[in-house]
Amino acid sequence: MKDAVTRRRPAVAGQFYEGTRSRLEAQVAACMRTDVAREKVIGVVSPHAGLMYSGPVAGELYSRVEPPDTFVLIGPNHTGLGAPLAIMSFGQWEIPTASVEIDSRLAELLLECVDSLQEDEQAHHLEHSLEVQLPFIVHAAPGARIVPICMGDTRIDTCRALGQGIGETIREVGYRVVVVASSDMSHFLSDGEARRLDRMAIDQVLALSPEGVHEVVRKKGITMCGFGPATTLLYAAKVLGATSAELVDYRTSGDVSGDRKRVVGYAGILIR
Image 1 (cartoon, rainbow, N blue to C red):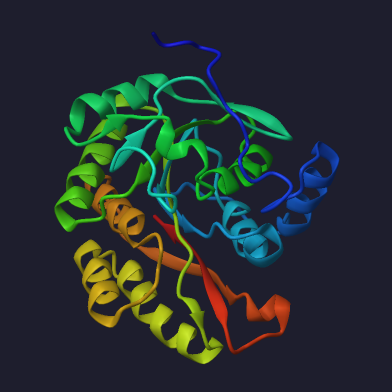
Image 2: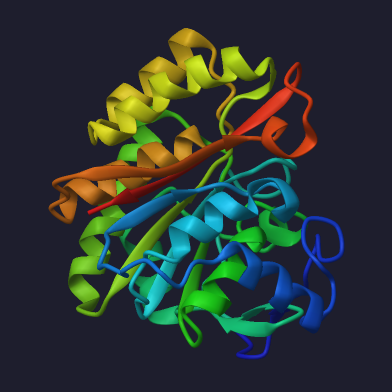
């Protein structure tokens, strides 16, 4: 039976981000900007590494997003646990600074619309890719709800069906929703090689081409962990009438660590 107080506890507090309210608030505030205009967007591609590495990119991104009523969060399944396409449709997700409500209406409509989507908490239990978005959401859009989706199945047909279902469902509910594709870029390459390969994938996102993202990642062996969520976002964006995209920031872990031999890339992209 569904329980309105079902809680998803933090899995990576104190590891990927600060584990106390005061420290986390300060950490996120240091990443955000107050001198940029906020705008209505359809979706974003946002990184999900530890905040010391990817926090400035995520902060740059969320600083520019006009707060919606709900964020649909789509992330990769790093753990291999749970259903191939897993949603949580009720309850709350907790981080040290807040408890974030799941938008049950939107989540249940998605379950009805997308046949391959399954109610499954296990896939989300230890997964960090969506959790790391929450400190920024709580700071930038207090009171916003979420719909968490974890993707283990990244086949193009799956991305298309989920993305189109998300787009159609957002149109149906009639309130403001932003879709977040949680993705880091190339992993453990030299800084120069990571930037070269990442630009190929980024260019396809900027062209609003879901097929292009999926194809270039696979053909070029780009280790973009959230290419499935990014592809899905672009299919949803097409349904919602997207016309442009902007790369607002790109960095690598080498910008923080100084190690340029083995980096991870982080991109922040707005879809309008």
